[in-house]
Length: 287
Image (cartoon, rainbow, N blue to C red; front, side, top):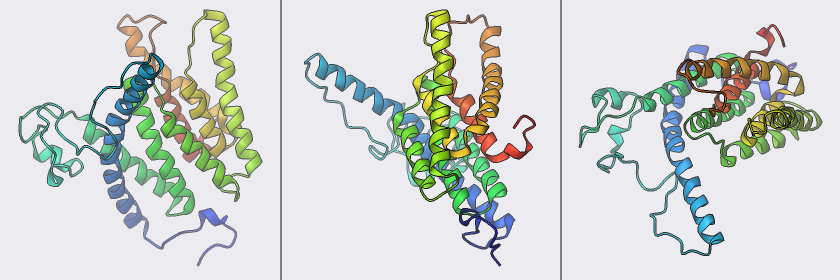
């Protein structure tokens, strides 16, 4: 029987035992993770092509004749020999293990990044369902989770947070707030604005002090997402956690002799901190 005291977005969408729900969404996470690998690899290339075309237009140069690239086309293939990956070679994690971590055609090594992303997405999906059940709230948080995984890896690799990922996420949350899900419109808008401005203020202060841009605008937008979904009250927790995680990321680079001018992506730290705060805020001692 549905608890009448629960908000509508926390009411179960289907009746499943916890074990079945977690297992089902872990499998769904594996499949989504396989697609996220495509997003992580191709979206930066698509952005680079777009930038090149814009630069050519600005300089009044003819556009190139590069084969159009999208998330769906061309078919996934080995980057070394261009062998098209068949369906049975694309089963999350299993195919990577059965193929001996190499291409079936040229025997070139297949990076462990692919099964890592798939396993991470499966694990994160299971955690979301364990915490929230199969509800409208968990569906929204899963969508956020999938975007965050792609954002984190892309920022780690390329030092960019694509607007194509973060802005639709922000608008989705703001639209959901129109029906009070999970915050009111005013609370969601206030949280988004304060999330953006809090990092923007830090960046401006650092720029005045050190004369350099230390934080990218993508980081502002990403924190705005968490302000919109969790409320402005959680921002201190998110920023504190992100700073600690960022320090952990930076330590190996500093130990290797990198200086303070070295660019360190902050997006992965914000993503991990914001996701943790979103799901576990009642247990965080400084919330």
